[in-house]
Length: 460
Image (cartoon, rainbow, N blue to C red; front, side, top):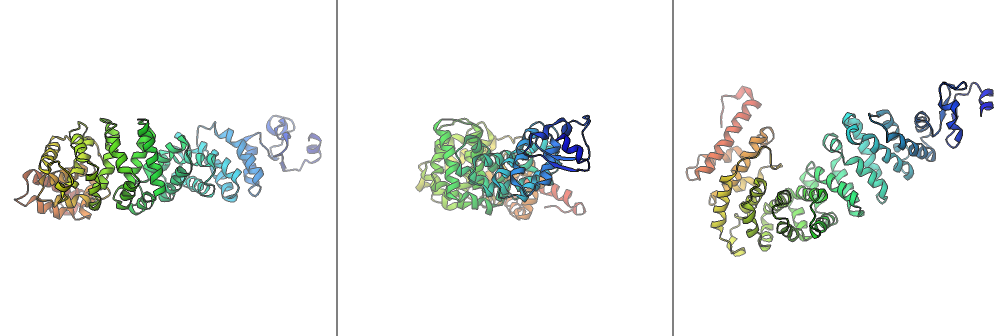
């Protein structure tokens, strides 16, 4: 090699990808007498050789795979963002989309380059390209365990899931496909974590498409069943419950599939097993509340003899638990044929509901996020059951107090103000309900003053 270079002094490129000579000192040590800074060398020893290979061999998958394999060891050591390297990897992934070895190695490198705090210092636009390439790989190679695990590791990042613009529906669907196909404990945990976050960020029509798929629902419920069987409450259990809660939100179709797949009976079992575990109880009751919002599904709740359990949970010292139990009771109380479904006295249960609401001390933050106030509007109009009105008004006042920018705007958009005014000025309405309605209207006035300073003299 030394003789060759001596007789080829004008040589500017030397490819040594498959030769051990790439590790010779004349190519790796700048102080070596034969080191030539003008000679570009590809190989597997130095980072520069590897990056040069990624630039040069975009049509040679064997070489690219070898570069990525050795680059992976370097990426494990980085403690600051390497956007230039990310861009090179994204380019070869795009150039060689059907090469499994390349995509496999590339997804492993991308995870190392974007994990933990590294992602915080990478621009969201770069991370968006990482996500797109990751999803492309997931879609193209759905049956390869390690590649799918690599992609889930990359996606399971708060920075990526919260701050990066991406096709969230596509991502959620691919993750659920992976969850359904593989039965890997680590992959399950990441999948349900990703889904629990994304399901709250996509539209109701999109959550319905996902949640109404019996394959996905059956898989999610099987995870819950397994945890119940072993009486285990871990992060996988909690994320799965959150994912199911978000997927059923304002989605009657998903609620029906949940019931058809045995979810309601399973959830009743959970409520009677993990007693006083407020985190589990809240997530379970949140989903049951979604079912209770669907009039034609309420009879299924009655048939599972849920009222005694709700009465117990209504007395919980944890306001989140009591709040959701109260919400379910409020919706069920709208059923005219209550007495045909249960022996529990409706009058007694409603008085327990009133007592619980009056005992609540509003918590520091929001207990729940709502997509709309439509489920509450019908409850506010329940003039024959002031206890139901009381819960609905308390709930609206609570979220508007904690997040006026979001919920006052939502209430205004959905014409909730007119209904609140009618209730507040109706002398036949329970005075406690009226007080809460006036409280909401006061918040709306303050919100409008901030939003439209020029109209400060107008009030509701």
